[in-house]
Length: 165
Image (cartoon, rainbow, N blue to C red; front, side):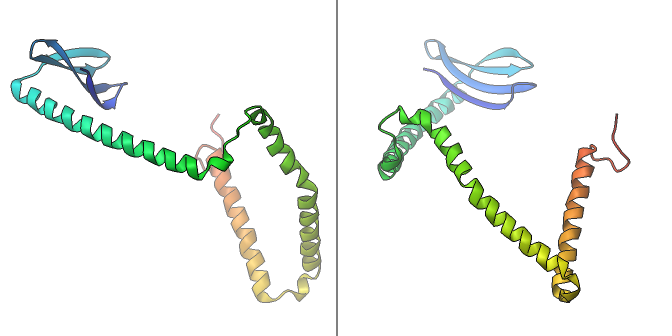
């Protein structure tokens, strides 16, 4: 039987309990430190604790696996209409996605053009803007400038004085 629990990081230290039988009733525990393996022989108390943990882990594993399998079956039954029966259609899906969105491009361009025309018309009569509309536009412009400054600050390596060559 083999049982493993890992804690830590492989770069510096790694405590991995690998329980394996060496001989009759003798089990070992491995510890990795700085890439080197150290083996310890377990005491009787530790051996009994590992055995009880092992039995709990086996029960938990069976419960989780059975629940995961039933949840998987439920999800697949509920979404069976999305599963492709003909696997040859799977090859065409990326192209269908791209060209479907490319087909929407003219309609989106027309909407953007219409919105730009409305914005231009509103800005051409800037003297007739209400104070509320002017304040909203000013706050929007300030926010755009602030995010530009944040991007410049990040791009310069979090330095206010300039680029660090």
